Image (cartoon, rainbow, N blue to C red; front, side, top):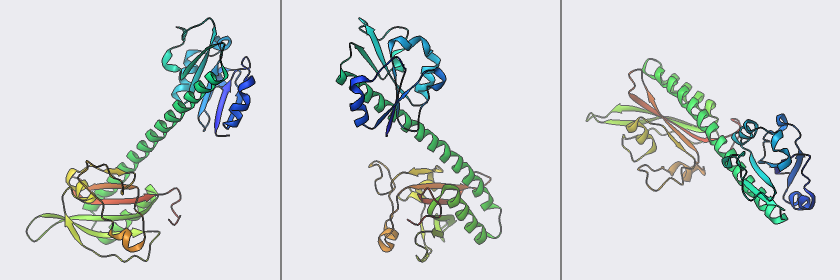
Length: 283
């Protein structure tokens, strides 16, 4: 079943049971407040009027905060949400007598809200994880200004950064001065787990906002990109697809990190490409 519907023993799904089961909704009785919990699936609680006193507001609020949706059933003659239940806790309110379609509409609305809350929680968790990763990578970058064996360190940084973020590929750029004294980025290292045969060709590029690495070097801020092929139309940077086109690769998610020294100056840029669930998986 794709969804979970919790209800008290006082409420009988009755005639709506076949429709709920047809929508892949599992129904489960919830007798006590401690049993009111969100599943890994979108979860809705049908709160009948007789059971309002059983489930305190703090329990209902915790259920909603955890990502659940609540559909309250009214008493006979109750035309609106009762004052003892805050309206912001409810995904729907069904007057009595409730029609089958009316109840199904309210339950579906509850699942939409529950799904949205679960996605918000997932996004927050992902953002927190990325923030921790960025902190770890920045600390790695501090060592770049003090390590003498630069070649060994660069390989260590990129390998460890890819492992921390479970990234399939990565590249590393160092900031240097040209003969004219202008800052530029030198492409120093690349790793692509799924395309180990791809040769490495060193080159330089300007430190400007036109490229992802250049933008991170100019602003000193990281970039988190869900799909590099579909960037927002108002951004200044773009992706170079030449590697993808030449070797049949597909760059999608990217994390672009400016590497800073102990003086907080950008001395390099780390690009991590195509995060995956299993680090050893070939894309």
